Length: 325
Image 1 (cartoon, rainbow, N blue to C red):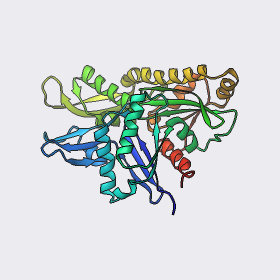
Image 2: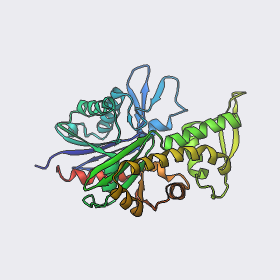
Image 3: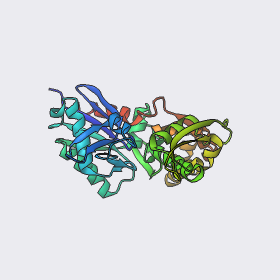
């Protein structure tokens, strides 16, 4: 009988779950809504995320993963358990082998929190893999090459960069900057400069439609709706690419600086190879406008975008799972 293997990419923005017996079973936001009157789970995933900023007073929406790591062990366990309950697959967790992705630079406390989540699910064996390493594997990189590859995974709450050679991490860094960081910057800008309070759904929409870190990008405009911070009444304002660029670029610079630090940490011969081969960029956070152009200018290296950036880590986990099936 084939072993039960489960891959879990528990991200700040999205959670993806794959079963060896069923394939992809879940790909939704990492959000859980709790009914404060009963303490029961009201919704998870997309339905919970849709309630952000719109939920009744007795329904509270939580993000159990923040900045790429488990922020609340109990909520994470309830979130993943509810996924399997909804899918009528809760028995699949018992005695399974679970492969999970994690940032390169986790503290012991953060790693233990992730292990606690998976142990509480009933897993028999737990394997924690580097997000950057899995992203490289998912992109089809030859992991055994001595020349190595530099992988930059820009997620929702954290960015990971790893230099990989001969199948292992030669150097790695993490920065708590990701797609959500850009969203929050837009929310602050709207509040401070437009007297308009907007939520995460609206700020993400603005980021994807008109946000860009490329100084040569076309100036576009978007009307967004929210609440006037002075009157408290519904209101709207016009945001532009030119207005948002100065608040987004510093965040992109943090990501570029982290990537440079990885290059400084590796041996000169490997660094020379990496500079020539360039950076493989993956992760949903990399979808913001102009990121490729920006990184090429800052790093002075070729930038290669993975063919499936949002799913890069999960693709790698599935390939790694083949060893245990």
